Length: 219
Image (cartoon, rainbow, N blue to C red; front, top):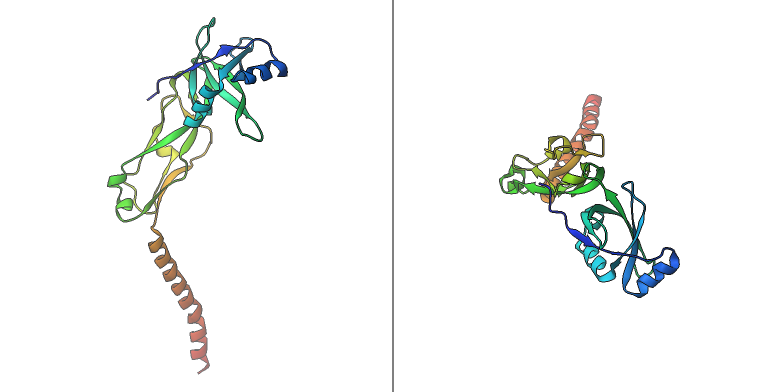
């Protein structure tokens, strides 16, 4: 279930501070730093176009990368921060955290749904509501799941899937210490309206009943 770890190719950056960072940006690079893992921080830079493309692909902050840099051994990293220009919203700096294979880290993992064709609730016109398209899990850096799967094949209208019913990857656990809903099947809007009208009619009838009894009692 663990996905292949993509490469992130960067270059060592000479110098630190605002001056060196501005020079990197003028040269079409985004400055950054790699830190953690019991090793001194390393100033790096990455081509702006490369970083911008990866950011557009999505989930950059939740992806484990194999960092490749000339003159250094490959190391697994995850991005902990992307600073952006306040006006143009373009990346201006990145912070990368080194990870050991057994490091535990909290990440948002996508939810995939199966069994939609067989679900009684959906067959009856119910609507699947994915309350949590992603679930935050504590996982091991060497075994980050690509997704978790929920099965809705037996769900009827009004039923839901909670985290306690999901088989999680070995060693993974939710960051939230309670049973929470991931998805549910709601009644179609037309059925909801009809049900609401019936409830209102019943309430009106109940309200009118005491008045009728009181009038009859006076006779």
